[in-house]
Length: 368
Image 1 (tube, rainbow, N blue to C red):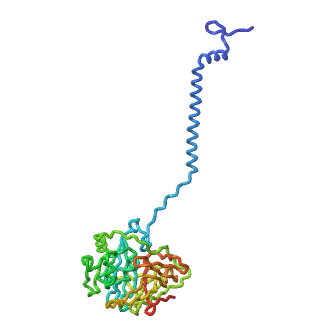
Image 2 (cartoon, rainbow, N blue to C red; image 1 turned 90 degrees about the vertical axis):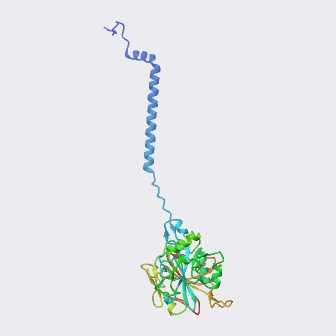
Image 3 (cartoon, rainbow, N blue to C red; image 1 turned 180 degrees about the horizontal axis):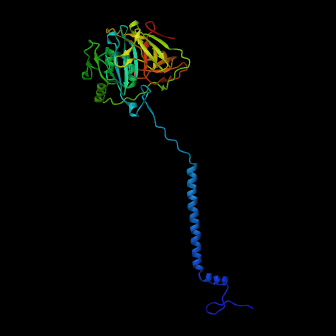
């Protein structure tokens, strides 16, 4: 017996699938909208997941960027690292410093960046000490200028501190092309010490030099000097004791190499050459240059001049070794250049450089 199912109104009850079909026909638009919303939502969720996954993957695989290496700046005078670019352009000052026995011990020589040494007259040597940036509190005794010291200082665009000078040196330095800070015209920047007698007692200071340069508008020096490099003691040193004879016993110098500091302890007249305030002078580089001398026959001043232009033999001592070299200088304002036997520029160690000019027949250089 087949019993039909009836709904509450007594009518024959349709199967569920037919009822769903009828319902779907009536609500087709709503179903379509709901389906579209579900699909769009699904696509949106998948897109978000993909983006986040890609970002995570990129983060995981990203190679860390190297931190930019801070730029370093070096003094063009000494090659020593300085604070910033402005420090590389600080004004340079060359100070004429006496070396007669009554002028010893001098002040300020140990802190000079580059020192040129030569005979001034009568076998007595003299220095022009070049400073840039920080300067010693006391410098001296300050003495007179010679033309060849001006020639060595000029390429550094240096102010030249001195007390008068030879006639040709004064004519040159006062021609308007140089930074002349002669004591004769700038007495307030110098003084006479009471513990020494004239003319061996004129002094100046780093502070007064800086003030004088600033007043005259000498606020920067831009120049090309020696190529510099980091020094390293040689494994097989061949020049640890150096003798540079300039004129006679009282002015002849010697150097002893110290590997620990990679520097050369300087002696003069058989005893350590000391700076009165800072102790024994110990340059990082020693250069000996062979020069010729020209008599000043055209004048009756009794001075002689070292020939600073042209070229000649040179010897560079650093790292406990010696390099046979050639010095050259094309004119008074051109820099002194040092090249090796192949003509290549010689890089000097960073730090103080001491350059001694000797004349064959009166002086010479030897080492062991």
